Each structure stands twice: as C-alpha cells, then as structure tokens.
Amino acid sequence: MKRTIGNPLKMLRSVVDYGQSCGRDFERGVFRISSYRENYSEGSTLRELKGRTSAPEMKPKPNALEWKMNYVQTGFTKSISVSMISRRMFSTSAENDSSDIETVKAIYDRILDSITKKRTAPPNALLWSFVAKCSSKEDIGLLYDILQKLRIFRLSNLRIHEDFNTALCREITKACVRAGAIDFGMKALWKHNVYGLTPDIGSAHHLLLHAKENNDVDLLVQVMKLVKKNELAVQPGTADIVLSICANSDRSELMSKYGKRFVKSGVKLRQTSFDIWMDFAVRKGDAESLWKIEKWRFEAMKKHSLSTAFSCAKGFLLEDKPENAAEIIQMLTQTLPDKRVPDIEMELEKLANNWPLELRKEKDEAFVAKLQGNIVALMNVLRTMGVDKNITIQGA
Image (cartoon, rainbow, N blue to C red):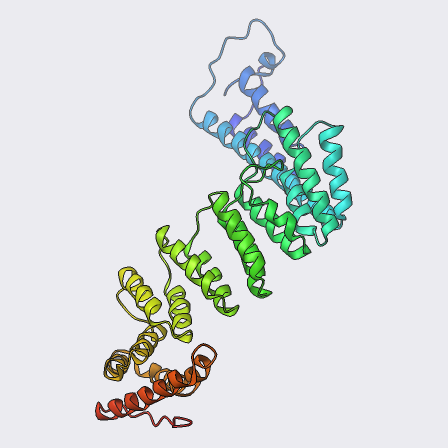
C-alpha cells in the first residue's frame, strides 16, 4: 500500500519557519528544500523517496513552488549580507577605536611595517589618523618621512603614479600650522615634491590665515611667492585674507601690489575685499588710488556697500567737493532700510572725528585743517538736504 507524502508547499513553509527560528540551521533548511525539489514533486511516494528505479519521472511543480524557493533563497542571502555587513562595521569601528588610542610613533611603525615587511598598502584611515594626531614638529617630521616612503612604495609596488589628493594635502598643511612646523607646511605648496602631495590654494589659505592671526607679513610674502611659482589659482577668499593682512600691517606697497595682481588675474573680488581696499586708500589720503579701485569695483558690481559708499564720500572730501560727498550720503539714507540708519550715523561720526586723526599720521597739519573745513561744509549741506544726524565735530 502506497503512502502519499503531504503537500510540498506545506513542507516548504515548515522549513522556512524552522530556518527563521533556528538562525544557523536556516541554510540547512534551504538545502533540504533544494533536495526535495530535485527528487520528488506533489504526489510522490515513499517508494520513490527510497530511489527505486521503477518510480516514474515526475516534473516539478512550477510557479508556486519555484516562487517560494526564490523567496527563501533571497531572504537567506539578505540575512547573510546583513550579518556580514554588521561584522564588517564592527571590525572597522574597533580598528578606528584602536587607532584613536595609538601614539603618532605607533601609527608610524604600523605603516612602516605594512610597506616594508608585509608589502601591502596600509589603510587610508590610518594615514588620516596619523595626520590628525600630529601636534609637534617631531610628529610632522615623522609624517613627512612616511609620506616619502609611501610614495616610493606606491610607485614601485603598486604602480600608482598619481599623487595623494588635494584634501589630504590641505589636512597636512593644517596639521603643520597646528604643530608650529611652518617650514614643512610651505613644502606642501611645492608642485614637484618627493612626498606625493598635490598642492592647491586651500593649503595656502591655512598658512595665510596663520599669517593673519600673527600679523606675519614675511610669511605672507613667502606664501604668495610660492603660490605664484607653483601656479596655484588664487580665489576671492585669497584676496580677502591677503588684503586684510596688508591693511592690518599698514603695508600700502603690498596692498597695491597684490590688489592689482588679483584684478589682472581675473579674480572676481568680493564686496568685502573692496571694502578693505578702498577704506585703506582713504585712510592714507590717497584719492588717486581710491578712484582706480572704485572703477574696478563698479565693473565687478554696481551696488555700493555702506563702507565703499562712505569711502567715495571721503574721496570727494579729499578733493574739496563736500557737495558730491553729501549726495552720496543722502542716497544712502534713501536706499538703505530703516534698520541700517543707525549705521549711517555711526559712519558719519567716524568720518567727522576719527578719520582726521588717522590722516595726521600721513599728512601735515595744513592738509588736516583743510579737510576738517570740508567736513564742516559737508554737515551743513546735509542739513539743507534734510539729513540732520546731530554729529558733533571735535575741534571745529
């Protein structure tokens, strides 16, 4: 008497449930399903399961069974992938944790061991961790030593001729500034170097910002020489930093030199750059330079800022034209929003009382006395225009 096996779909469902509940045995369950599918279909008998030759060849049931098989196998693959990803994430985080507590010398030794003994490329994260940990000139010395060895290894063993990317170069320059190793930071601006670095203007900005914080004009000059020599493309941000250093250090020759260089190179200067440049010109009492800068500003942008407008007003006062200066200030009162009106009054106060004191360092007393007379005339014209700001002129 033949004994009929139950519906294979029900058996399949039970195996799936078993695999989901047992975890590790899930693969075994899928293997059973594959075996059942190959050996019998719906209606098979026990005699056929025992492998008797008299058993007729049966075709497997398509569609429903096959769809269920794909579903099980796909689900198993996903579960395996998730577990592998989890293990990978765990191992990566553990590796990062271990590098966080390592010293610079320990990371140096790990990278050196990797390229000299194991002859394998070290993980990129290890090099970035090395850069982030550098805090002294000795650390930077080790960093540049390993960079040179890494470059040789990449060329000879990996046949990689490309240098490290600009992002790494910027971080290395930042680390040099942080560690006080400015000489090493300057090497990061060399187009042709033995360290595999790819310089860009972003690296120069780290050095220029350091020069600005310390009012270091010599460093500014050295960096700008390297920028020009290595053909690094300057940006509007470069002009902001350089012009502010020149203004803070009161170096008019450098201000003129670098300002003209930025304009001729086609850099689209920001409003802040023109604010610094034009204000510096009127503080020096240099009306001729002021109008040249104003021409460049007008070509770059039509609208004045509060600072550039008052610089033009001061320029007219230097040329004994208080009426023209008053027209500019009246225009500001009409175009600026109400919340900026106090700023106009503050700038007028600076113009009347602070600016003449600054010019005393550059001009003689006769010039300053004449200028103060023009300022008084300006205030009178403003009153006739209805712009009365109650400015008290000291010494008038």
